[in-house]
Length: 178
Length: 166
Image 1 (cartoon, rainbow over the protein chains, first blue to last red):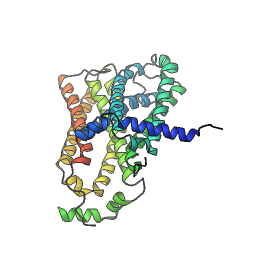
Image 2 (cartoon, rainbow over the protein chains, first blue to last red):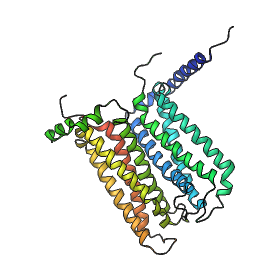
Image 3 (cartoon, chains in turn purple, blue):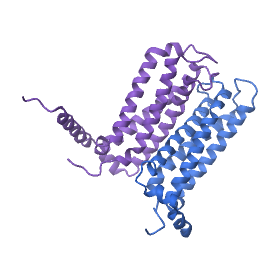
Image 4 (spheres, chains in turn cyan, red):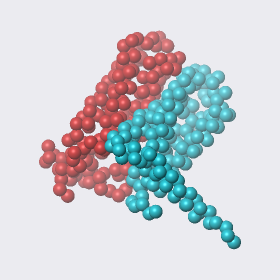
């Protein structure tokens, strides 16, 4: 009868994560350098534009827009999307490490993480199962239905990430309770 | 300008955007402004990167098919931007950074439009890229980085929030 309540152990894990992140120098860094946070935010927005501008473009082509563009050629812009994602992973990690409580105790953060997770699985499915068929598609050729669905899911998830990300600030916990 | 700010701040629209507890008011409009930015800045940046020689075998003229999506982003941001400005007119209009943002947006749009016209006018595909196009593409990217950064800095550089004493 000494089983631990899974909810309370998850909660204690979350508290430990907050305390551990608070022990990193990120918090001191953004306090010492007043402009670090706004500059990191600007990078986060530029990265977002790069990501949506290239990956979103590819998704729209998968969905059937501008079918005269050969998909393998358009895919050459994807490294810019990955660069945007990397910029955002780095700046996002700084935000989380500097102010963990306001993210880990925020509903909007979990929505954003869920959308990101689905986008990640979606990308994995695309490259594992469909990429090899797609790279042979030339001008005028329609992507197969599953690939079109993947394009639609990707676009929706990135829009979801933007919505939940932008709304984070309005769901911040009002006080620190541990 | 203060009487104008005060008048704007007291309009029903301004009060609603600023004070409504609904997530569709200020937070929702701000979210639409972010999504519009992603499509407007993102797609025109991809077009600029193509001009600079990345993915150069993508027919540039075919990329013009995305112009309606770019317009969608632009109109979304014009409307949401005006609403955000209505909510806090003094905050933006008394901040030099806001004028930097507007100027660089205008310049980015002019540069990318010139680039788009060059591509549309070229009859042969693939479109030959001229050195002038590289300049226009680089300017587009640079103006976008400045305008996006200026936009983000609006939250940190304002000297006033409201002109009215509520």
